Length: 542
Image 1: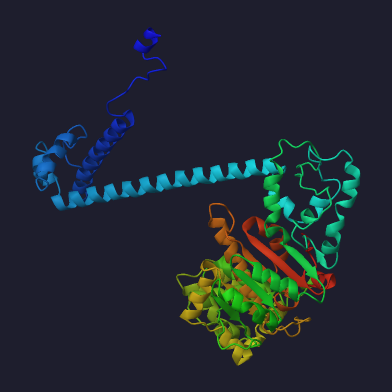
Image 2: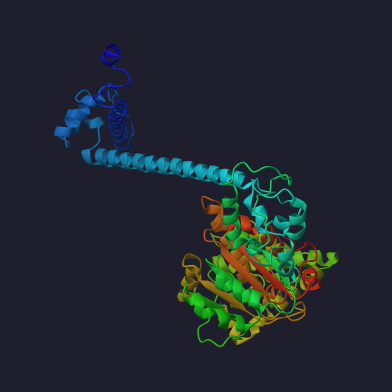
């Protein structure tokens, strides 16, 4: 034992002293970096002053030059005695380049450290989520957020301490949830999934569902805990689609229960009056009401051409504006595409030239049809090729051009009303209010008339659809820029009577892919036939 102690055994660890190796390496790297910066600053300053690299300015001689400059920072020729003074620059240019290089190096270092730290944090978070999903019994916890499958007999699993006769319990397990989930709700669970767990029946299905749909033994008694936390969250009820005449209660309940920003599309002013006071306590509330259906003195105004300096934004905006009047027949597809091209180019021209949206209305009526061509051809911010695309649409196929112009004129015919035209003329306060909706967790109400046949008289439906599509697109881009790829807290979209107020072209994709990005959608419509008439090529299924 004494020999082990003398040799520094485990009972008495040897005390180490001195400077750590990492500190030595760091100091050495710092000195070498300063030397490199001083050498390059000397050469670059001389190169900028006299157009040539000075003679005998070598990296090996730089440490002696730095030692001289520490004592006499103004004596640059004395720091390089072997170099002709006329080949060196003044000390001001030298120190300016040296400090600039040092700042650039510092910024790059901070950026690299931040990028690496963010990457490690995201990777650790994903590993933790994957581990939690495996512990819960499914690699994708989102699979538990829809459908009545967690209570189905094929996906349930008996805990190890349960009674042997499982069959009877499985046949009675779905009974409590059937009155809630049956009816007009499709594509999602109508009530919070924790309700069956509160019943007095012994076979409550708390065991996790395996990824392959098969049941198996639980790894440990602690496994049901994370699954119960997943089912306790409000997200399993969204997204979903509700059909039927009585939809107000579901919309009000969803608006009041939302945690983050809320976008409400409705034709019922009662939904606004029932929720505005509660939502005002959580964040700012704004109303976009072009037809003045809501009794309020303060209404949000919005320019549909805002942000259309980007060509992709103009394309999305044009598609949304034409969604209400776009013909559904395949033979009319070329006409619809021509109208979309006209409207996209007009929006882009108005945005880059700073024109109000009423100018787009004039162009759609045929006044100054070639003015946007001139703007797109001469303005420096215009996208390349936009002028040629617009001119080709205006000059080729006269019959198709006339039909496309008629379609765009019908889309914007509501701007003849002074109220709707004023709703598209925002001020600075309106722009800031729309920005605060996202950042402060506010509520944006889009209120419009319910129109069953918008192709003949769309009213303000194109404007409501365009603003709703703009909010959705901005939310998606914000989610893509975030480290987790989703919005936190999520944005809740309550689309009441959406098919007759603002038929979003991207609604099928929003219901299918929105939850992964933090976009939770509640779509309320009168019937499945109404949904098929608005989205004939896509099924609204969750």
